[in-house]
Image (cartoon, rainbow over all chains, first blue to last red; front, side):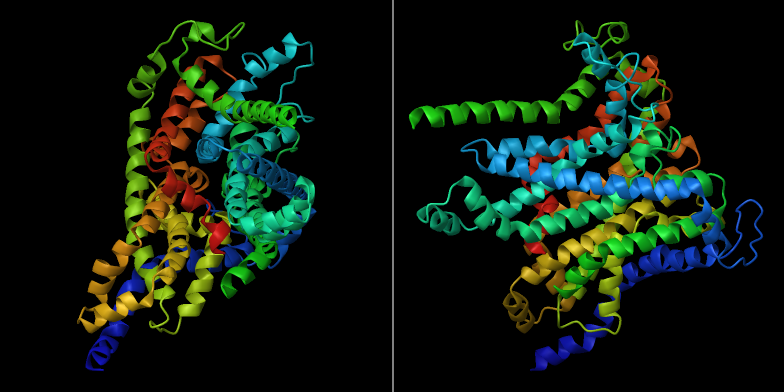
Length: 292
Length: 279
């Protein structure tokens, strides 16, 4: 009893000491920026001119009237849907494959993981070299077998798809790893029961595996959506949003037309739109995580 | 029956080879380009180089200033890791334990989750103006702070579950022996969650090491360039003269992570896949 009281006394100071640094960092680095991004978004703030009169919703109106911005939103949504669906699907196939192996599961798991661990910049550069129209191995192979070659990043027909493939190559391993861990959690007894009932491979996948990993699939899709939606590195390095705006994403648009030009009011409005999108997309995830 | 299973094994083997080829060929190509002499990079490129050279690495580090970028990346990632761990672990412990109450606890927990989800663009503009006003925009501090901003929510969110999984009795009995809260945390709780710390430390280091978005916006002078920035500058147009340099730099950018994979892959993998089982 005495001891408990003693510890209880110092508790407040201990809690304060343990949380104050984080609190301070969060206030300066997140609370303050979010508030001021909102404030800036209602002003005509250019960093060089300095003056920033209040212009209400003008930035937002300008943004939504802008064809390039609308295209960037469209690209981002399309890219995210295609990338996430492919990554989860391919990740699941890989996980099922590796799980079905009798040996070398661990080795294969770590080899498959490697692309995800590379910096996005490095991944972009590797593919740029392989797909180089003049010196790349890809076009050389295509030529050898008589197929048409492309200037992959400059051709409006191929640029979007090429970046999509590169992103899928890098991030499928993450989906694989997560789903592989989920598969390990499916109890063997359920498979045995299904086998006794005479279920084949596909039946036991449908009735045993799938119901057990629905949560994992949803989480995986969620995490990949949040991450893919902010796509920037690969686009900025490989195409800068071109050709003809076909690969521009929201972040890339904001970088080109707001941050580089130091039009911080306009860029802030763009950031707010982006943030609202992300909040809507991740609402389910946040809700679930807070509850647990 | 025998025949069918034999066929199945063969098929699985072919699929495996195909997977490994798709996954590893680009990495193989990166390694190859970094040690291939420039004369072998144009015309018909062979899959296996005729001769091997280290000229790209030597030029990269002696003439292109990649040594500075490497130093910057190491310093930034390490400092931000140490600071994020120090503050993040303490906060995660408080948030994980029901016996610690304070008014903002729930708000703080939710805010941290939100910060983890929000994109960098939600914070970066006011940070840019703030750092300029403080006069630190020409230094390495903005990148270190940005990496701390990325890593603190990750560490807290990750470690909360680790702390919660510890049985409360350990702390109870230590308390009865008269340990202060700080001694309890430092001497008893932290050693028990070391595996979790190792896993999250590797993840944090990796994210700081790979960071590009904040860096490209918050860095002005080349002397503060990190490896991803330096690589993106080296990579100008479609220019074969830089392929060797870019590859050598790209391979260098992969080395620390490769060390994790070789020496501590279990921690790394448990860190990356933690979401699957924990949430």
